[in-house]
Length: 79
Image (cartoon, rainbow, N blue to C red):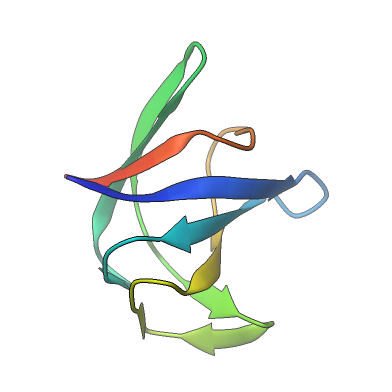
């Protein structure tokens, strides 16, 4: 199920900004897919406006540490 889209990537911290279309919680397993990149990982933490949160709702833009470099427009799925 698609839950969001990458809107930015911060190379210096290895984090992606994700605009959510569905709820996301710490501990959820996600898949990020775009270009020739596709990987799964567990959300170990996320932030909204530099504040740690345990869950976020549709419409929120969250920062999530990611294990690989991603680009704007990549799709985010819950698995």
